[in-house]
Image (cartoon, rainbow, N blue to C red; front, top):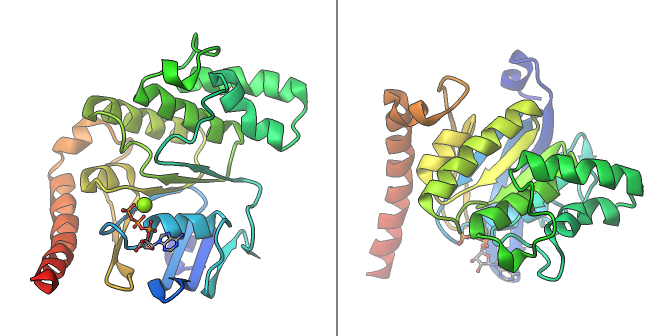
Length: 266
Ligand SMILES: Nc1ncnc2c1ncn2[C@@H]1O[C@H](COP(=O)(O)OP(=O)(O)OP(=O)(O)O)[C@@H](O)[C@H]1O
Ligand SMILES: [Mg+2]
């Protein structure tokens, strides 16, 4: 465990040691070393195609790594693991299931008793603001509501690790802002290790206790930025001078990469 994690009294929950991933001849990333603590939100940004989704899938145990190892609570990950939930970019809902059935799906699959499902599903449906829509099908919901449903499904599993792959990318700006603050509120009620991939630098800084910047080809960790902004984060955070400072820093770091890619193309 790092001195930093120990200093704030938290153990590390996820350790990524020298991890590399290849698809055939394509080396997506290499030598990734990261540690995520028990109760923190780490956001990941990086150019499109640098391997953010791939990394989440490796942590989730859906994809094997080619070099190094990923450990969760000490165990090397070789397959999906209890306590780890993922929220996908495109909701990942079953169109033929209602909100209630979609939210309860994970529990049902895990073989949870009927009584537990009957208790937890309404609780999380309510928590994400979908009360009254239990019997609706995904096509009857807005994008924001579908994302709430996907989030509720992950939360019903009461995960200790929540992996989120651009969860709010497909919703409009206002809904996105509402969902961001609601997610932070939910996280404060039940803090866990949250790894949150986003294309939005603003979102990365707003949500993250730390921001990981992936860069290069193959990519690796270019920088890990501590977001020393006051908690709880709310709308006023967006106007904080330090927020602007960190956002500009991340932006410049990423733009260098985009410019370099353009130069190569020319
Ligand atoms: N199943 C696969 N087989 C082969 N190559 C893949 C596969 N999945 C992803 N790739 C390639 O690996 C690289 C990383 O993909 P990945 O989806 O992880 O990137 P990303 O950072 O999530 O991108 P984005 O920001 O656009 O979502 C890309 O070059 C992609 O084409
Ligand atoms: Mg992706």
